[in-house]
Image 1 (tube, rainbow, N blue to C red):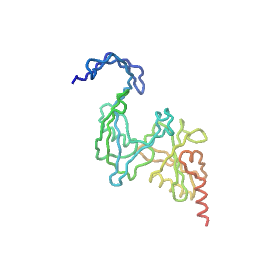
Image 2: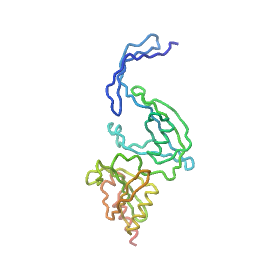
Image 3: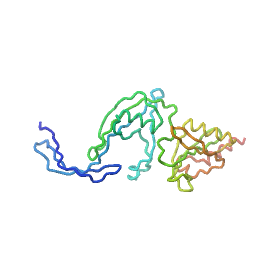
Length: 259
């Protein structure tokens, strides 16, 4: 069998920013013998990445995250907010195992105990140098939830409380500290975790409010800071972001409790 060989004839950088595009001039051996003609290929050069599927064997649950992806936006996907596993770029001097443990805490606030490698592969070897290492990791999913990895973008959380229940939540994101929907902020769906829901219900009870919008900020370390309890909250953006009809829910609640 003919030995498989490839030879780099020349390369030049086409663009270098967050991504790097390089033009390679190559020649490689052929299965029929001899060598190919010289040809060029544009390659997206990226550092290796690692991905993690967090799994709680006690509850038989996996942990997934949801975040905005510009690639999905550019592809005109129905929603650019993608549900996915935890993943990130392996930094210099860092192993793939160290990276997924770090990213699990940054993206989902969970600690990985046991870690099992699954596979390493090239997601798009035809035009990208990125190699991906995929793992499954044991976690405790009982208290996982909330907002993580948001230090570089202004945002706040609003949880809607009716009676003793946190019935819906949304994250309001903006380019400035003003996160009002009426000022152009965008709303995204949020499923309040137990800690966030309990905090919101307790805050509403302090004011004796049967219906309230509780505004909260995520803080460093995965905690929350109460900002405001609004007893006459608007719900502009809530239905679009979550599908939850606050007006209908509130009307039903008032009819049931008025008897």
